[in-house]
Length: 314
Image (tube, rainbow, N blue to C red; front, side, top):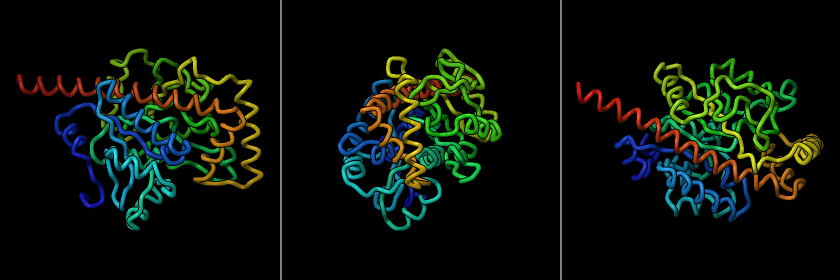
């Protein structure tokens, strides 16, 4: 697979040394924010991960290869020009075969992370069951990735534009646990609470890491959702968010936007309708998730260190 999947020297060294690593997606760079904000955000998320003591591994497709750990020049190429394809599990291989470039979503980032041995991934919010999915069948490939790849995904719940009760129900059906960090409710992205309970709540990184490690060591085969609410000071009020969401969803239906185009359309309209407040909130929760993911990766690496010491002493 070396011709198709390239691991940067820094990430390779970190994997060999069992240092903490955090995978980062690249769709937020190319489709989440306008240029050059997306590129600035990518660099900032990497800085946050490094400041918290872990190695960042931003993932993307350049020149027909999946890169785990984009260099500064590669980030510039991916985030600095238009036309990058948004890649999930369904269109990843075709874009690589065509020699193209693109940014990875949650599902394709999870695949890459699991393939090379990275167990922690930070993102904004996972995809799930879209509103009206009973008629449209629109369900994110993130759901399938969480059922297949043993990676802990630190996120602020699912994107608030989704059907959250059905998304949580599908995760339970697939055996994907939801661990709340500092919360006993599944977050609703821009909102800290959804009224939906998590499977288990944790207040310390050590306890959370122990549960994540145990899940992986049991070989249950699925990922873990680490539900990390948006910082309280950055939460959008219901009075601001709910009317904007209702209007954006109505416009989505009127314009017949479907599939991969739905999320970028809704995020852009929400930004416009809230006068940029959703963008500010999004940046805050992304940085918070990156920091918590780095702390989780560090704690998990401590378990590896202790296990190695125990083996050596015996």
